[in-house]
Length: 303
Image 1 (cartoon, rainbow, N blue to C red):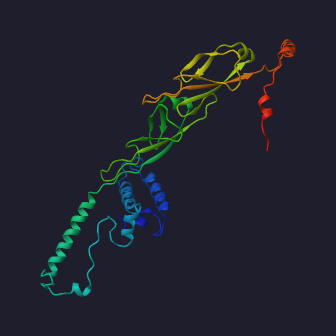
Image 2: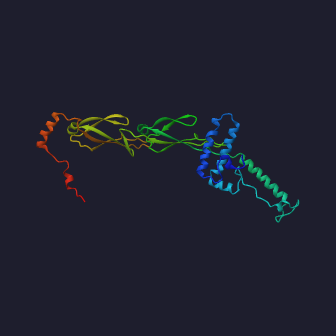
Image 3: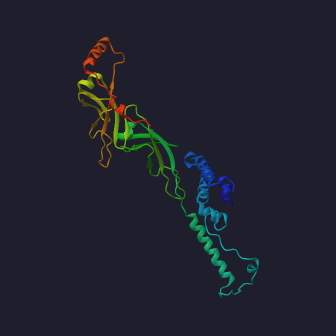
């Protein structure tokens, strides 16, 4: 490993944490062993970069390294002795009654053991983040979908009822570990696309249902789309625009057993171009059946 961990990552000693992380990700992406099979030199550099980031990527270790408390391998540095102490004659007895040569032998033995322990140290791989867009129906019902990663396509299970912005974790599908350490995870953030028919509120599904003038006046049975197909809905006589009807249990069904409803809001639609017969009928009808739907507005108090 290079003497300076900052040189390993290609950053300056005073670099910000985000700059260090960015440099690390760029290097590991290009040096990844899966992208350079059989290249021993690149693999060694990949390991060195991972080990360097394990120290510089953590505030505590980075501080210890910058203060000279640990070395490039993360091992504690041995105490420094003055030149006068180093020149003491062989067999000199200190205050504690131990010889200088004995103390130094213990120090070097400890350093050797620290290096051996460091050589066996392992690091977990970094997590990888991805984005995945799913339709409203896919999010509501769940299912399988593929996501393209750096070197493979994976089948992802979409949990039933997942909400926009939620994250799916794929264990061990991130960056590989170092020194036998576990691989990181793949974190997939879900974006639920807008649907032209349905919208969601908690576990309930909302839908606006256009009906004709005569269906509103006379009532009847109409077909309504749901997450699982069309179902019949009875329209009461004299229905109004904005009136909401409930389809029990037709909303989002969770694995926990909780299920929402589908809320159907009626919207009375006039013909695109009323014909003469309808116009004549309404002119005749209003003579004896006039009513004022805005009556309540007249009592409003204006400031």
